[in-house]
Structure formats: structure tokens, C-alpha cells
Amino acid sequence: MASADLKDELTCSICLNLYSDPVTLKCGHNFCRECIESVLDTQKGSEAYSCPECRAEFLERPVLQRNTTLCKAPFTRPGPNIAEHFLSQEEHEDVFCTYCIHTPVVASKTCLMCEASLCDLHLTVHSKSPEHVLIQPTKSFRNRRCSHHNKVFTYYCTEDAECLCVSCCLGEKHRGHQVDLLNEACKQKKEKLQIVHGRLIKEREETKKKVQCLQNHLKHIPEKGASIVERVCVKLKDLKMKQDNLEKHVLNEISKQQEQVSLSVSNLIQQLEIKEDSLSRKLSSIEELCRIIDPVLYLQADRDDFANNMGVNDNLKEIKADDLVEDLIISTLNSGMVDIMSGLQKGYYVQEASGVLLDVNTASNDVHISDDLKTASSSNIKHCPKTDTKRFEESTILAIKGFSTGRVFWDIEGSKAGAWRVGMAYPSISRNGKQACIGNNNKSWGLRSFNKQYSIRHDEKEIKLLFQPICYKVRIYLDYAAGQLSFYELGNSMRHLYTYDATFTEALYPVIVVWDNGWVRVLN
Image 1 (cartoon, rainbow, N blue to C red):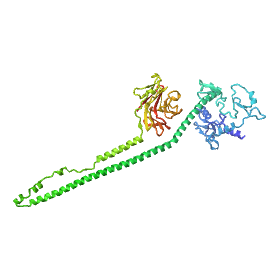
Image 2 (image 1 turned 90 degrees about the vertical axis):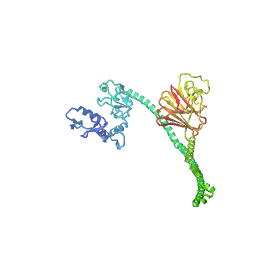
Image 3 (image 1 turned 90 degrees about the horizontal axis):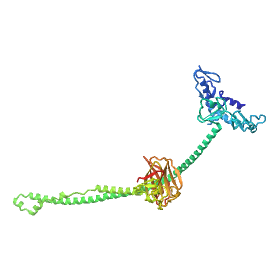
Image 4 (image 1 turned 45 degrees about the vertical axis):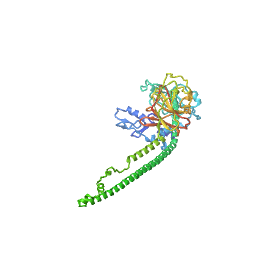
């Protein structure tokens, strides 16, 4: 009884179903939003609006206030509103056969036309006509009937995505629309949903792989960072040591020059002091001659002494003191700094690989090579028969020169259309069959551009990258000793695409694969 009373309290007096989006008028009565709006629409143009329950009048169309109490989930938890909660509780209860009045028997089906539930026995004698739609047992017929015509939903409008009764199909609103039987529409939607479900599963698996790849990459970042820090610290320590040695060398050079110049200037001072004494003696002798008054005595003075006193020495004009040669010191400093930087470049900075040329003797006969040996293009013309064992069977060419030491990079530009792959490979890679394809073995590493998507491949494992090509210019960077092969896109700024970690056992040769009218040009 209490359940029935609660159901009455939660039932809209217009549609006689449980509230759907309940709203409240100023008089306090509750209705489904759609129901009361339909009633108010019919009252438009009249002198006043009125409540269908108590006939209270309003001069203006009343504002519909959402009933937060009825919309609130029970026990203040997120979920369905009170009416929906009551409905779900009601539907989870056992449903008994309507016609078994003496002994309750659990129903197996409910007929929407009859609004009756049937056990297996009564179901055998029930009408099998299409109008009698059978569903899983339920006590609630809410949303099972049309609120306008009070008829069972039997059709579905695919254009408006609405369930329809027979009368709705004949109405103006759905005239000319694609209308299917409910069961058929449900079947079609489930089939489409299964397709979407399968696609989402596949996309989820691909996403998981990408996440796993990024997580693995994330795990290696601290290790790589520590390795770089160690190398940088070693270089900085070496740089500091070389700077200290250069400082000592330059300071020693300055001290050496200072000592030499000081000795030279001291010798000059000594020579000048001797000359100064000689000049003083001559001055004294002249002064004594000048003090003789008697002309005879003056003229009879020692002529040699007189001649010596009258002589002029021009050595003063040739005396020039040495100075510190600052230009030589600066030259020594600059030369030492150049040597330090040159050593750093040889030991740490990456060198651009010079002279990356394509080896025509390895090119498959469906690849055209430019005269400068820098461009490989996919071609339908067979250029040369496959007689050389070094020649690839399909779409591939190696460079002439390989790398087995140091850090180098080489740049390429690929076609926007068509397909291509670039990377590095051992010269011992197979030239025929599936194993000749770059990335299908453990002897080659490649980056592919196809259908506006990047992917990397090695040892038959391919990973699609999150980045879409922007400029189709790529840098391939090799650190042979560290076992790293990296790919970067050269846009307005260099963007890292992927890095392989491996232990290289042979020299690595640049390799290019082109197909579907694709082409690749070496930019070095």
C-alpha cells in the first residue's frame, strides 16, 4: 500500500506516468516539463494561464521551476532522480502473471498492447499478432506508450531518433521520414554499435600500445639523462683542465716576455749611465779649458783632448727600449682556445655526414637514381636487370658509405604524396624476400611516411607515431658508440620523432625505400 501511495505521489497527473524532468508551478503542483509545456501552449491566446490540477490562474505564462527535490538522487548520492529510482526498484522486483490469480506465477514476458504480464502457460495462448509487442517482464509501462495518442510504441523514426506509435507515423511531423519496426531498428542499431565497439576495442589496443611505448620511453629518460650528464661533466672537467693549462701557458708567456724586456731595458739603462759618466767628464774638461785666460796657454792645450771633447756621439738616436708584445700574447691565447674548441667538436659535437651518395649497384630495378646520386624515385620502368647479388629485389637502395664510429647525422626531404621509408641498415641485410624489407629484420631500422602518418619499424615490430608530417624533412642522427639511432623532423623547429636503442655490431649504411610514386632526396 505504501508503494502504491508513493507511486501516486510520483505520477504526473497529465500523462499518468512517473515524472520525467519534473517542474513546479507557483501553486506548488508538479508535472513533467514536456506535459505542462504542451498544456500551456494550448492556453496561449486566452485571457489567462491555469494549472491543470487546481485551476489556479496566472496572468502571464508561468515560469517553470525545476523541482530539485524530485530530481535529487535518494540518499543525496549521484544517480537517478527519486521517480527513476522508484521505477528501477519496482522493475527489479519479481513480476507475476496477470492471469494466475489463485497462485502467483512468475511471468516470462509482458505484452505492451495488453499491459499484462504472462507466464509460460498463458503465453502459449496469447495473440501472436505484431501489435502485441512482447518484452521482458516489467511492472512499469512508462515511456512504452505515446504520451499524445496513448498507444504502444511499435515504430522508430531514424531521422528524428524517436519511438512512434501507429498514429505518430500518420502525423505531419514524421511524414516522408524513414520509419522502421522497433525490433528491426533495434537490430540495426545494435549491429552498428557492434561495429563501433570493435573499432573502439582496436583503437583502445593501439592506444595502449602507444601508452606502453611512451612509458618505456619515459623509463629510459632518466638513464639517458644520467648518461648525458656524465658525458657533459667529463667534457666540462676536461674543458676546465684545458683552460687552466692555457691560463698557465699564457701567464708563463707573459712572465717570460716581462723578464726578457726587463733585462733588455736594464742593459740599456746601464749603457746610458756609462755614456752619461763619459759626457760628464768631457763637460768638466771643457769647463777647465774655458777657465784659461791666457790665449797662449789656451791654444797650447792638449789638442787630442780638445778634439775628443769636441766630438759628437749620435748613438742616443739609435737607442729604443723593447716592450711586451701584446699581439703575440693574444695570438697565443686565441690559438689555445681554438685548439680547445676543436677538441670539443671532435669529442662531443655531432658532425654532419658528408658525401652521402646512393649506390646504384644496390638499387632495385624499380628505383630511379638521379645523376648526382642524391635522389631516389619510385618508377614503373625497369631500369636494369637484377644480376648483381648486391642489388635489392624491390624498392630499396643503400648508400655508398657506411658509419661505424662517432656521431653523425644526415638530412633528407621526402615527397608529400606516395610512400617512402628512410633509416640505417647493415650491409649484410638480405636482398630478397620479406627479410629484405627495411624494418622486417634485426639488421635495419626505419621511419616510414605513408598516408600522412609516421611510423617506425624494426625486427617486424611497427609503431605508429602520434605526430603527423609537417614539412617532410627528416634528420637521421647516429651515435654509434652509445647505440642510438634517432629521427627528427626539421620544421620551423626540430621535433624529435623516435630514438632506437641498440648494440650495433656492423657498420650502418643509410638506406632509402620508395614506392607508390614516392621520392627521397639527400640534402647533405
